[in-house]
Length: 353
Image (cartoon, rainbow, N blue to C red; front, side, top):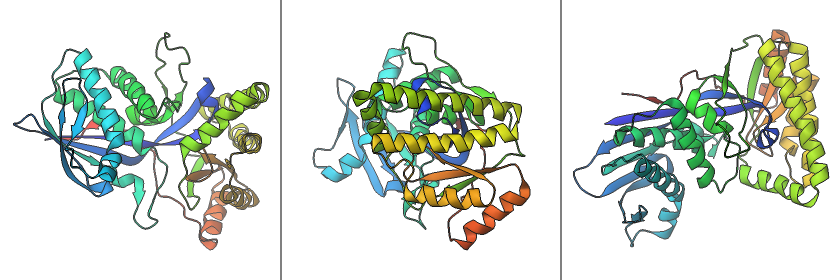
């Protein structure tokens, strides 16, 4: 059996700006997606996902390299395997292009780490990117492809981008591939050389508290809404995104140079600019939940911003003062707002056994 895992992500600063090529700071977190693979002595594949409550389902690969489930398979069940189908078909294309052969496999998808049974919700730590990265590496190993980390990164970046309808920056894929804390820049020119993210030293004195807003959010909806602003008011969009890009670049530099006052000011400014972007695009990037948590954190002396596309999922409270961090934690408990227990995961996508 082959078992591969990849970490999730938590964006520290750079949301939306990273889509336009600005540097952004991301942290891999210790919530991992697992792919287990067994070879089968037949031409029929098998896929299951206990995390989604999906029993093992057989499928075959037709002459065009496309996945075909049993025609009698329940439509809703096939739909829930839709994301896997898109990733797997793209991974097959990658193996064919490499001149490799993929044997029939029994595949189990495990993303339990990204869901809370207590809250009946996913957190927003990038489960699809982690799953994609782990699956690509598992497929490469199974097909006998000895791919370098940069090759796995490029393949998973291309495949995930395609599976997501060409949305997203790839920052979550970067975290899943390399682990640790990274400065990531998206390559805007498809013909240019891929930019491999840069590892950044951890900064223990800068406390980052991941906070659950109380509900999950649709990244696709937020990004699509902001994209509409770009189409309808390009000058305004450019102005806002240039501001976000400036703040993100300054925040990345301040984190690397461990300049606490500068970094905290960048976090506060980024929150304000996201609020303005949301207002102009009619998207609830700063929802009532984020606004309430921001008020609580700033009253305690810290800084706050959403992590990700906004609206729901998680936000981050920042402080370099242990006393302020303690006050924030106490206030969160008092207000019954959930502080998430996640840590930086320095391990990249990896073979577990």
